[in-house]
Image (cartoon, rainbow, N blue to C red; front, side, top):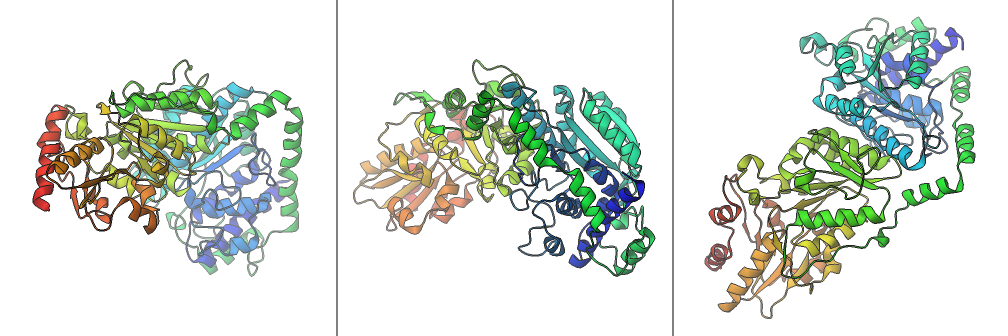
Length: 636
């Protein structure tokens, strides 16, 4: 293709981007202009099909710098996705298909919501890891696509990017190509203000092949992509670029990063490039024809479809449509003592045995989280993933693995360390990604490890997160019912499990109502109070109810395995489990302020924990039946 036409294609991307940002009066023109040349050449290498964005063997393209959304939408339009010029003109407007940062499920062609810097690199690693396990199941002749990721200086400064890239190098993810927009600019100015490392050596040290190119030289860009596709290692392409490339007077300036260029600057830039300065949102005929010629995904997909044998087609269909009704769940003996982390282990293995695409792992805590899948090999040859001590990367990687199209993947760590992965959990909730988070050691019951390892505010924090479902089962049997509910949710769920043994209650419960988030466990005639509790505190609530009954104070007991689902219920259901004529108490060994939505009085943690035996700590902080029994009598 001629240099002239390539320049025209790249400039079309630049001016679509600057026009939409100028019309919106907000946005980031610098990165789209700087990456336009690379994006143009990538169009001749990437295998995608805009008419079928879910084609399994498509190349994945992730934009870790979500602020470069103008580039994303320009490309999607030029590639033929359902992003019209009118959509581009409504950039960043309320209810538009082109929000300020791209969102999965909202705009056609977006692979994943990346949001904060660094997430996208970990997501790209996740897509690559998912493809490697797909190869284990289906073969390399069936799954052989690439995963491309645009990233910048800001992405590589985030610690998350190193966590994820280290994992990619360790697993030798040879279909991963990171395209580093190295323009040495961040919001405050030159990167030298806060950053001076040797990126090339850093990535070589973690088993990447590193290619260095001029990011505005079409020949070098093309050669780099060709070489990357043949590499036997993950690849980092360091593309030296100028931020705001093509801007008449602002090229290379950090001021182009996060603000419109201005009408006069855009006009001058268009004149310099040979475009009409008075025309907006223009896609020349020869430019659109050139992009149409490059993106020939239908033919590639048809060839791939024809290559599949009957066995592969059946396996893909089964992976894409898991039969959760086929799971044979474990049962547990009443009155036995089983930590919910232990019951969870049996449940995970039951799901794994029935569902070929169910897999996952822990951030180096599998023996404590109880997440090892028995008789399974280590990833990528099996289902047990060893993420290492990288909670944030783990959760971000698993987000992408769950969006790959074949798998349901869980991650695991101690509940208190959920703090390290909160940004990824938030993205999972925002994008409705059905990741299962396994979080054990749920309270001061952790004991001797002390307050640094005892979660206090975490339950409240995640219950406050929209579209995120936190399950804290009271015993092994309730844990099974929680999983049955969670597997049907098209949203992330978390299982907050105990380290200490919990009594398995008799199965006389209205388990069908676990899907409502809470249910009436014990109903007494002429009740004057209701006690709500979750997890280990439910047995405590039952004991308190018996003590109160001896003094002719009748208490109903409500189990709350998922507070988030309870919030979604209508008043009619809530009135069936919480008698409006009773005084409502809630018990939880955490901050638990959210219970005031329903309760008159909450017995909770208002300090951090301490180091000591679990039984002694529950007494120290007031979580014994005798102590709370006396408090309730006093409060009545």
